[in-house]
Length: 125
Length: 125
DNA sequence: GGTTATTTGTTCGTATGTATG
DNA sequence: GCATACATACGAACAAATAAC
Image (cartoon, rainbow over all chains, first blue to last red; front, side, top):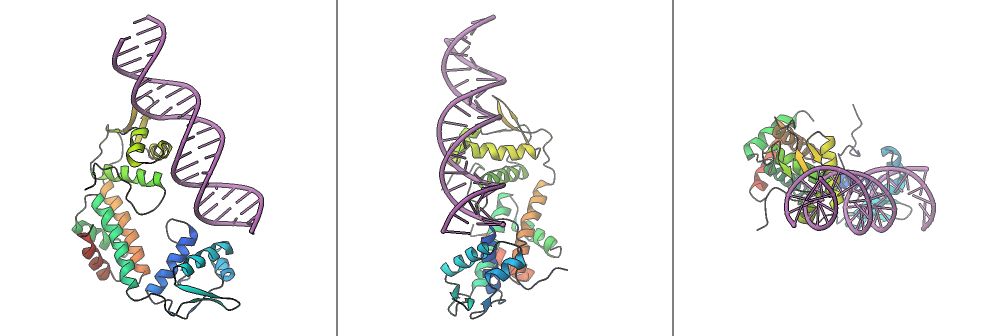
């Protein structure tokens, strides 16, 4: 079994710094992170994910620009108290659902077929 | 209304040449392309999608490596007679379903929630 | 029959963004 | 912050197959 504390990089594609930022959004959406929580330092997270520290800095910078986190010099990086979390889970779920619906429709699949395929693969993950 | 002859680029993310290759796979899966069919020339498709002709060449090159198409200098690019089409629709649908299942699980959503979200957005597309 | 023009794929170099050290 | 390596996308010039003259 692999470790599972919320921090991972097993997503399929895209820039690493975006995957990390997305991961933070997901952890916020499912309550694994809440306002006031302290994020790992750039060096520590970089070591855990085996990536360059600058990549973490880049990801945190994007999250700061999104208004999700704030950096406190000498203390670390924290989830902002006014971070937008309400309804974020449903927003992200709807986004993923829209992408799946779009791909299914491009394959000329009905919603019944799409649901059937989803049920088939749900347990496999 | 936008034109809809099967060729488009409105997918969310990823390299352009991969989006084009994926589009060809989808058209093959739903029967919009069949073995022996002629694909648009690199220049024509590039003009239609407003991208560089070399980007199309790159996408076609990947499809050729996949054994799906073949190029004939001076004639054009064609779907190979022995292109694998059987079951391709289900394969691609399962791939998309797996991606959606993965994202839903990372948000701590149940399969019921995932199906509900899918139903909600199905008509919106 | 040979030459030209058009269409097509092929190949070179260049610029930008990402990841690394 | 800077230098290097890699992938992606772009641009222009090249070579082959076909049709028309």
